[in-house]
Length: 325
Image 1 (tube, rainbow, N blue to C red):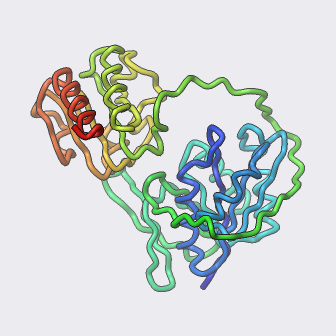
Image 2 (cartoon, rainbow, N blue to C red):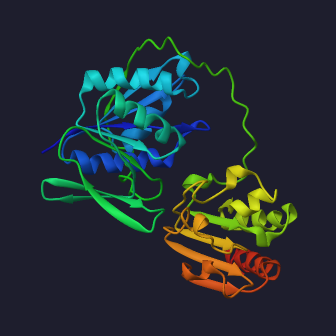
């Protein structure tokens, strides 16, 4: 049976996040031959609506308001609840990002809906839709079927295939006026730390350093290597605790969960807390001088050696390949 499925698009640094397109792909699977309705909230979002249509949305509702310039759960939930009430979707898809993890439970509780979070795969099984999600820190997976009510899910970035982009695809863009008031929190401005390189949560390649990197200067080598690869830089908690890098780079059970196409662990021992954040990467390469390190148990490829000798050689060889030497 076809359904209407609502997708929340996310904008970061003046562009749509890739996971927004993956969410449309997930919505198309859930909707079958039904309608995919995308929603954009913010202060100046109209320009992004066409791109969502090119990636498979049938209709885009845009809500522009000064109180939506910066994300707050109060402001976003007011806008979304009014749209959900008017549209009555049978499905809702958010990204399993910091925003989605904060907002989805609030919306689910307001509309008295269940929520399947951190979905990594969606399959059609006859009349049922199977949602796969990791449990026990990624050691096992469970499949869920929603038998009643709204199919409300959040999807993990880099796991669901985005719908094929076509600039010839057309759809309806509907600006909507919604009053956003009685906010408990109003954000006047956001001061961000300068981020270097590729966004960690959506990167296709991640280079992560651990205590074996030994210093902030050691992380400079990682940044150089990542720059050559077009990769994002991450870290273990041990490296963050030692002050080698900022906690915004932390990957693991108490940090970010990433699932890139390629994960390169440099000087990381492979503690279970770190594996919880990266073990579902498609390919894992480990570089460590201790051949007995636990990281080699999950790695597809391993290099036993001193990272300060290995990294410069790898960096140089990749440079040669890129310039065709």
